[in-house]
Image (cartoon, rainbow, N blue to C red; front, side):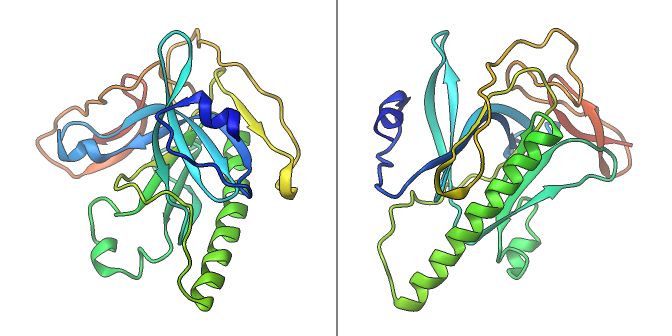
Length: 242
């Protein structure tokens, strides 16, 4: 944990004697907040390195040719659940969606254009998606159990970083460029091999990763509501108009 603390730039102090790194991988953060900035932009797919601990999830960005990780944010796991996101118009998108357990009971949050506490992630392929789903389910169950126990016993100080006001999703894409490792600590699973990122040599599609994040422009249309299509625009997927 000490070596990890010093290897990530701008990382707040996350050291804890009970904290364990369980899973690490190069995934994509799906940022749909750009809809409020540009109505023609559907989603941004942002390459991020995710690190899942037994009580927290952080994501970083690789900067420079030296491959140094820079801390970008923390996903608050309290009162959260994870599900495999399905789309009617597209399949095999390998998307995981983290959302609040209480979002559906909150009428205002349920009717919001963008749910308040949501994080969407896209993985590289179905196997990686299932691996992250299983591990997140385990961590979220343990986190919510501890939270419930602490609530029954009264207020208790926690070391978890505050909830970030952003909404994202873990999104998976099939590609030859992945890096995932799993820890053997605390019975969370068996270890996997580290796969060094490589550069894709084929055109990008729904099963390949973009080299960098940028806006995905949706062609305008004079009529009809937006519908999700399974296409890739400049290295991502977005909403089109039929």
